[in-house]
Length: 226
Image (cartoon, rainbow, N blue to C red; front, side):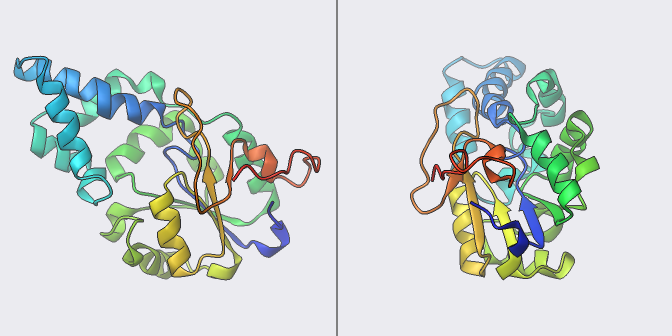
């Protein structure tokens, strides 16, 4: 699927790509609405209102900002995340893939919409930084990955040749934005959340396991699932 001789830079998403999206799905759609109702002593029916409020800002820079939600909802988001931090974990063979990338020597950059508070929680728990050459958050740039401004700013911070760059991301809107910028090698993730079914990405190749990307895999294992 990937000709690694044609890749100098690997851009990796974090949530849903390297990390199991189950933590975020559970926190934002289950744990936070429930705890919000408890902390503010509201009726349980308010949970659905909070879910709708959270989803309304999807894809914006605010949506990825813990400080924004702390102001909007009047709760300590980081403290509530720590209540379920045991759910934070790597996707299946993500660690094996990171080890292989470190040995193969492309430049590996975490390009994430997670803000610095989220990174401060997740990176120490997962040990990701040991395998990364750089970490760039959309909060540092001032634009989410869904916007062209992100990729222009990222290229200034971490110079890369779009024709020799691979992006792996579970978000099809982000992949489309990267394609518009000119990044040539794009891959999605079939099952970002281990507790939810696989899904199809209409316009992009996608993988269920990183092992399918490695040159050591057999021809039958390299078959695309996109």
